[in-house]
Image (cartoon, rainbow, N blue to C red; front, side, top):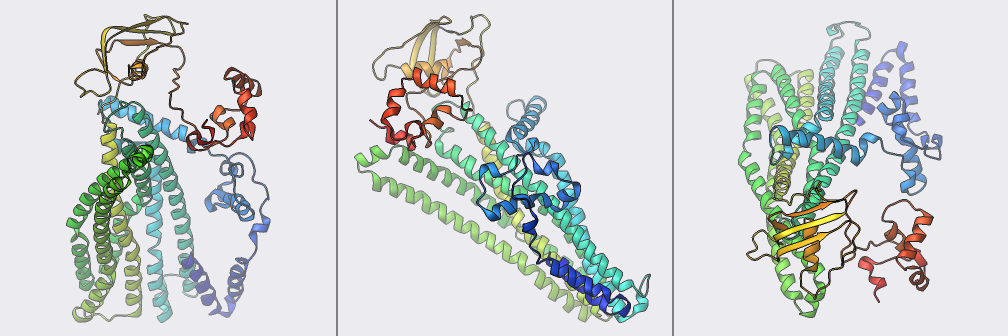
Length: 576
């Protein structure tokens, strides 16, 4: 944006050079002064309903003018959920998970029946948005070269007006106008690219989170794969890392185009000196390849340590009562600190490698600039004119951004590759197949044939329950009575298909869905009413009926806020 502003000012200065075009100087000052106008006062005080982007015009979408309603409302007050406009259908989690599942199932049917490749599925799901983003980025990057080339034409024209290709009296004005329009168009293309790529980043986050959550539901109740630490790390760390890397993906793909074109122009202007600079730049760019491999190895080891730390912390929180009773705090803290110390040691090495790589690539441009002009002064017979010097400096300055982004993007891609491999390993873990409804049973019936054994773990030597036999007719009320540890919960888990069965002789025939209320209640840190509704719309008649059936009416009278009483974590204030 600053380059656009400088070009506008330069346009005004060049126009003042001629008395005939003195009016352009006043236009320039008028443009600058309008930037101080309080535009927020022109915005509506209420955000219109529906999706305001779909209702916006083409020009409003191109300039993001439709966002002014939200920005203006946020300036006056803190935005709430109801203040935010509705999402487009294409932006909802439901839509994006559906299109991901379609590609995932296709990959499973055609190429990888057992475990579809996550990396391939993601790329195919996002092919069209990424292609549009890539083309916008490439065209925007190509337009940035109009600036350095325009500098050369403008300096040559100032030194000798006869060098103008056309419009000898107005050529300078034309060059400055072209530079301004190119910068303006570059900004529009890059911002449109940023919009597409950040949207896809959010879509990837929702798709991967949904995939991991569904996979966790199909895993055995007990097992190393379903440890709380691993699943939590996958969702909070690895998914975020992949989504964040996507925003830099196009920079990594488009940076080589910028670098190649800039180096070609440098060689064209400086000759042999430019070629020497190009060779040095290529060598220094690929020199730290071994460090990239070491960086990937360290990222793998850090992920392992993070899994251990999160798993141990979760275990401590869940069993804090037992830990306090037995005075095990110091032992657990020492173990946690040991894992954390190793994780921090690896993280410091990772940051060291990244700092070295960033230093090498950041120092690359000044070194190459010095080498290029030093070689030109000693090897070239041509004169170093201002147009060649300033144009070459502009090109070298243009190289700094793609080279630095290439370094950051390469490091982020390495981290994302590690995260993708870990999620892929999690998805390939053996899960329990769902119990299919049996057509031979009436709706609502359950059948367990003789000699069915169930185990919590497949590696378990002796079954938890042996030789099960159970037949439940539709409409029956069945109560299982037994002492503690006799296997009541194990029987229910087996019927739900949560345990390993040998052979698989448990069949259900149900219509609709199956619900299960565990003896360990999951209570949200919300009001009692919100816990009862559980996200469903409020229906007064049905709500009162539920309270009556659950015999909660008398209990509500004892609570200070009735059904609006805030319930603490795990129902702590309902105890007793």
